[in-house]
Length: 144
Image 1 (cartoon, rainbow, N blue to C red):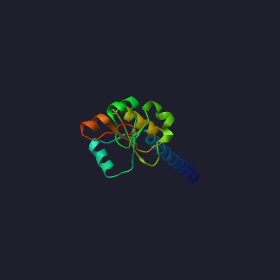
Image 2 (image 1 turned 135 degrees about the vertical axis):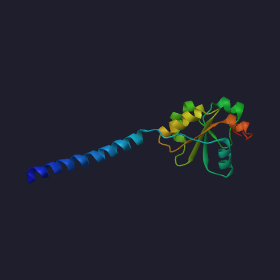
Image 3 (image 1 turned 45 degrees about the vertical axis):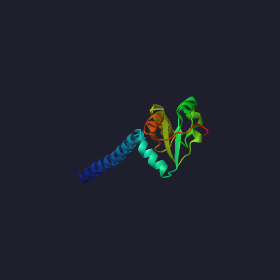
Image 4 (image 1 turned 90 degrees about the vertical axis):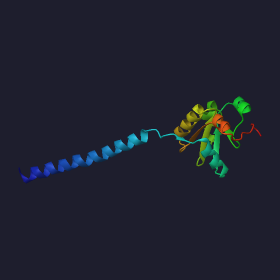
Protein backbone atom coordinates (compact mmCIF):
# COMPACT_ATOMS: atom_id res chain seq x y z
CA UNK A 1 0.00 0.00 0.00
CA UNK A 2 1.35 3.37 -0.87
CA UNK A 3 1.78 6.11 1.65
CA UNK A 4 -0.88 8.24 -0.17
CA UNK A 5 -3.45 5.41 -0.07
CA UNK A 6 -2.81 4.86 3.63
CA UNK A 7 -3.26 8.58 4.38
CA UNK A 8 -6.49 8.71 2.37
CA UNK A 9 -7.90 5.65 4.17
CA UNK A 10 -6.95 7.18 7.52
CA UNK A 11 -8.60 10.50 6.65
CA UNK A 12 -11.82 8.80 5.49
CA UNK A 13 -11.93 6.60 8.60
CA UNK A 14 -11.43 9.55 10.93
CA UNK A 15 -14.03 11.61 9.11
CA UNK A 16 -16.58 8.78 9.28
CA UNK A 17 -15.98 8.25 13.00
CA UNK A 18 -16.16 11.89 13.89
CA UNK A 19 -19.48 12.32 12.11
CA UNK A 20 -21.22 9.37 13.73
CA UNK A 21 -20.66 10.21 17.38
CA UNK A 22 -22.34 13.64 17.39
CA UNK A 23 -25.23 12.20 15.37
CA UNK A 24 -25.66 9.42 17.92
CA UNK A 25 -25.44 11.89 20.78
CA UNK A 26 -27.99 14.17 19.12
CA UNK A 27 -30.36 11.25 18.53
CA UNK A 28 -30.08 10.22 22.18
CA UNK A 29 -30.73 13.79 23.33
CA UNK A 30 -33.78 14.02 21.07
CA UNK A 31 -35.16 10.76 22.53
CA UNK A 32 -34.73 12.06 26.08
CA UNK A 33 -36.38 15.38 25.19
CA UNK A 34 -39.29 13.58 23.53
CA UNK A 35 -39.97 11.37 26.56
CA UNK A 36 -42.75 12.73 28.78
CA UNK A 37 -41.72 13.65 32.29
CA UNK A 38 -42.90 11.41 35.10
CA UNK A 39 -45.80 12.95 36.99
CA UNK A 40 -44.99 14.15 40.50
CA UNK A 41 -47.61 13.15 43.06
CA UNK A 42 -48.23 14.16 46.66
CA UNK A 43 -50.32 12.60 49.41
CA UNK A 44 -52.57 14.30 51.97
CA UNK A 45 -50.07 14.42 54.81
CA UNK A 46 -47.27 15.79 52.62
CA UNK A 47 -49.51 18.56 51.25
CA UNK A 48 -50.85 19.41 54.72
CA UNK A 49 -47.30 19.58 56.11
CA UNK A 50 -46.12 21.90 53.34
CA UNK A 51 -49.16 24.16 53.75
CA UNK A 52 -48.78 24.19 57.56
CA UNK A 53 -45.11 25.17 57.11
CA UNK A 54 -46.28 28.21 55.15
CA UNK A 55 -44.87 27.12 51.82
CA UNK A 56 -46.04 29.33 48.95
CA UNK A 57 -48.11 26.85 46.92
CA UNK A 58 -50.59 27.64 44.17
CA UNK A 59 -53.41 25.18 44.83
CA UNK A 60 -55.34 24.66 41.60
CA UNK A 61 -58.77 23.12 42.11
CA UNK A 62 -60.03 21.95 38.71
CA UNK A 63 -63.51 20.86 39.79
CA UNK A 64 -66.74 22.46 38.60
CA UNK A 65 -68.30 25.20 40.77
CA UNK A 66 -71.22 22.99 41.86
CA UNK A 67 -68.73 20.49 43.31
CA UNK A 68 -67.11 23.26 45.34
CA UNK A 69 -70.47 24.17 46.84
CA UNK A 70 -71.23 20.56 47.69
CA UNK A 71 -67.84 19.40 49.00
CA UNK A 72 -65.92 22.56 49.92
CA UNK A 73 -62.34 23.32 48.95
CA UNK A 74 -58.91 23.58 50.52
CA UNK A 75 -58.34 27.04 51.98
CA UNK A 76 -56.41 29.25 49.59
CA UNK A 77 -57.16 27.19 46.50
CA UNK A 78 -57.97 28.82 43.17
CA UNK A 79 -60.72 27.27 41.07
CA UNK A 80 -60.26 26.93 37.33
CA UNK A 81 -62.50 24.12 36.06
CA UNK A 82 -60.65 21.61 33.88
CA UNK A 83 -62.82 22.57 30.90
CA UNK A 84 -61.61 26.18 31.17
CA UNK A 85 -57.94 25.54 31.96
CA UNK A 86 -56.69 25.80 28.38
CA UNK A 87 -58.21 29.25 27.87
CA UNK A 88 -57.33 30.48 31.38
CA UNK A 89 -53.85 28.98 31.70
CA UNK A 90 -52.29 32.47 31.78
CA UNK A 91 -53.88 32.89 35.23
CA UNK A 92 -51.62 30.17 36.62
CA UNK A 93 -48.39 31.74 37.88
CA UNK A 94 -45.02 30.59 36.58
CA UNK A 95 -42.08 29.97 38.88
CA UNK A 96 -44.26 28.84 41.78
CA UNK A 97 -45.06 25.38 43.13
CA UNK A 98 -48.37 24.33 41.58
CA UNK A 99 -50.48 21.55 43.08
CA UNK A 100 -53.52 20.35 41.13
CA UNK A 101 -56.49 18.60 42.68
CA UNK A 102 -60.08 17.64 41.94
CA UNK A 103 -62.50 15.16 43.49
CA UNK A 104 -60.44 11.95 43.32
CA UNK A 105 -57.47 12.64 41.00
CA UNK A 106 -58.41 12.05 37.36
CA UNK A 107 -58.91 15.69 36.40
CA UNK A 108 -55.97 16.76 38.57
CA UNK A 109 -53.76 14.46 36.52
CA UNK A 110 -55.08 15.89 33.23
CA UNK A 111 -54.56 19.44 34.54
CA UNK A 112 -50.96 18.68 35.54
CA UNK A 113 -50.34 17.20 32.09
CA UNK A 114 -51.80 20.31 30.42
CA UNK A 115 -49.55 22.49 32.57
CA UNK A 116 -46.47 20.42 31.66
CA UNK A 117 -47.43 20.68 27.98
CA UNK A 118 -47.68 24.46 28.37
CA UNK A 119 -44.14 24.63 29.79
CA UNK A 120 -44.79 24.67 33.54
CA UNK A 121 -42.12 22.75 35.40
CA UNK A 122 -43.20 19.91 37.62
CA UNK A 123 -46.80 20.61 38.54
CA UNK A 124 -47.70 18.29 41.41
CA UNK A 125 -50.77 16.06 41.29
CA UNK A 126 -52.39 15.94 44.71
CA UNK A 127 -55.42 13.89 43.83
CA UNK A 128 -58.64 14.85 45.46
CA UNK A 129 -60.68 16.61 48.05
CA UNK A 130 -62.19 13.22 48.97
CA UNK A 131 -58.90 11.97 50.44
CA UNK A 132 -58.33 15.36 52.10
CA UNK A 133 -61.70 15.21 53.87
CA UNK A 134 -61.34 11.50 54.77
CA UNK A 135 -58.08 12.40 56.53
CA UNK A 136 -60.00 14.94 58.63
CA UNK A 137 -58.44 17.99 57.01
CA UNK A 138 -60.47 21.23 56.97
CA UNK A 139 -62.32 22.61 53.98
CA UNK A 140 -63.87 26.01 53.33
CA UNK A 141 -66.79 27.07 51.20
CA UNK A 142 -66.05 29.04 48.01
CA UNK A 143 -65.80 32.73 48.68
CA UNK A 144 -65.35 32.07 52.38
